[in-house]
Length: 203
Image 1 (tube, one colour):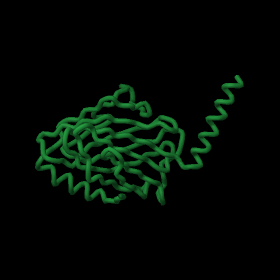
Image 2 (tube, one colour):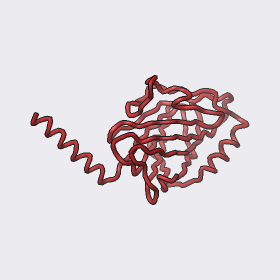
Image 3 (tube, one colour):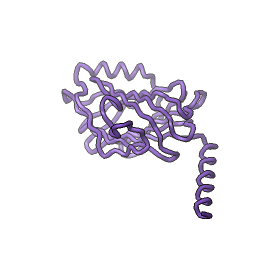
Image 4 (cartoon, helix red, strand yellow):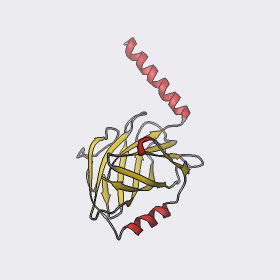
């Protein structure tokens, strides 16, 4: 089932829950962040790469990986009170310094053992005017932003992704992110790779 929801709904959910529980800690482990430029410190650290308040997580990512690269976060959240379920919102500022234009972007949320994710909502933006949320296997959720009538994200440009969900149980989950070029760009990138391989063999 596909669902489209306004970010206003996420804010309403988040503030409704704020009286019950608030984020008091984030743990990021077993990450594949090789496609990100982590700056001079080379680490995913607060507050230069991420920050949070009671109900909201803010992430700042500069992508430098090539086509086919993705980023995998292993996240655990600590709340000041344990409630049957808690709403959490994410805002991600993402900058494209890869070597290709982004016409789509995908985030897959996969709950850890003993964790349940539900009520996933996401917002379109100026660059990606269409967003779909779809249930996947094993309790996962797939959020896909598509350019549609938006501008997409060119090399050196940035976009903001806003989404949220309800989390219950052990409060651990994986977040896999993948930028997707236009179909024509995929073909060109593939041809460039073949040419490079031929040059290496001839050398």
